View 1 (tube, rainbow, N blue to C red):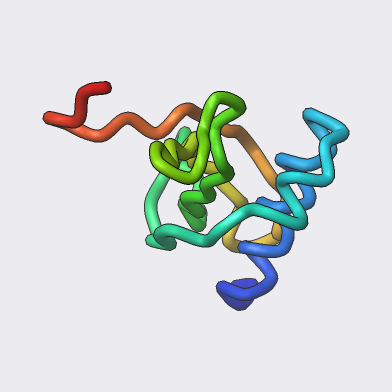
View 2: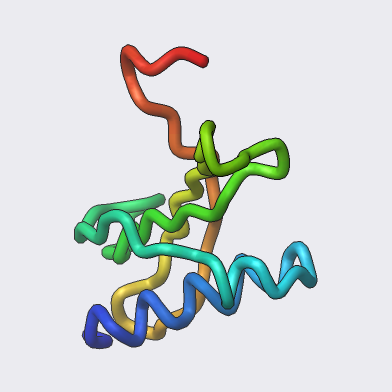
Length: 89
């Protein structure tokens, strides 16, 4: 099983490669990590966030993404929008 730090690094690199945007590397924050299962595979579920495009100092909105990283190989498998129950704009 890969260490959690390697899973986080893989998730950040994966997100950055999808957008080709350095914000994922330079301004991303680690929010959560947990072990889970996706399609029968054990994964690290890594929640990352970056400032939303319309965020400002008085309204620091963030975008949240969950990356599933294979816990055995470190391969990124998917990325989803992370929704929070009861949170509204």
